[in-house]
Image (tube, rainbow, N blue to C red):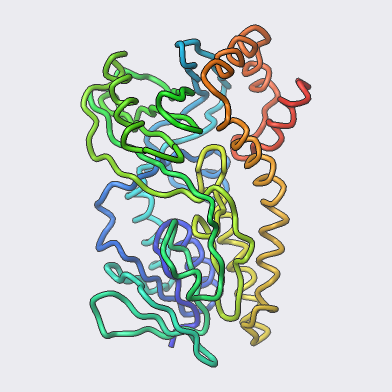
Length: 372
């Protein structure tokens, strides 16, 4: 029997496994992917802060970005730029593989091609079943780090978020873009934005978020990119769900949830890597304390929930509301907002204030107060 079974071998699951294995617990990570060769539907855009805080090696960072150019429905552009790199692009499949190897190096056991389908709580342990095998695994505690979707939250006595949106992305070829561009246009998304992120001199990640009709909107976006000559063919197109509102029901007896499955995601951008890694450390800290106290009931795991709320609740509440308001705006209103921002140098002033890349609430408040 293992001390902890982690379901999900992405960066967040592997981060939890590392912390727990270093803390002296026996850890099993079950990952449904057979390997890390398949493209992941994720921009892999992480902040310089994330790179530094979690000691992500430079060999994993493909491109660095000092700013972004935002394009309006009628083609107006506003830009922000800083001297120091603000973000880096990591190749997700290499990033995931690196984190998994780090977990193995400190003693975590890692099994690929094990798709967890059932979790049953017993009196003093948790039993896990996987697709295509009669083999079961037992652990004293289970950590869900599965990413979006599935019914494992309910099987652990937890409640998943009901607020989500679509993310769709592909790889564009014959790329002519030299920097990150965001496109704010209801032609491409019902309630969010689209992006084109160069990953080398020939290719770019092209994608969007929308709460409906992802294939139709992506087709319109691809036609736009072709017309402008930014990219030609886009292939390896993938769609996934993105949780855009957290669930605070993330602990129960012998179980807790961390990362995307718990809604620890930036509502405005859909990015979940940095928040997930932060919460992975909080989860591991609580688990190690609970093992030391020889108690794995819900009460003993509640400090994790409280720490996550202290870290993220205000941020997710403010940015979530801002995202919903933005999603209600039509192209005419967006265009007027661009004219105002260009006239008053809004993005330039924001860039000068050195507001953080990962925490949007402070930026939103400054925009509302117009205090630069």
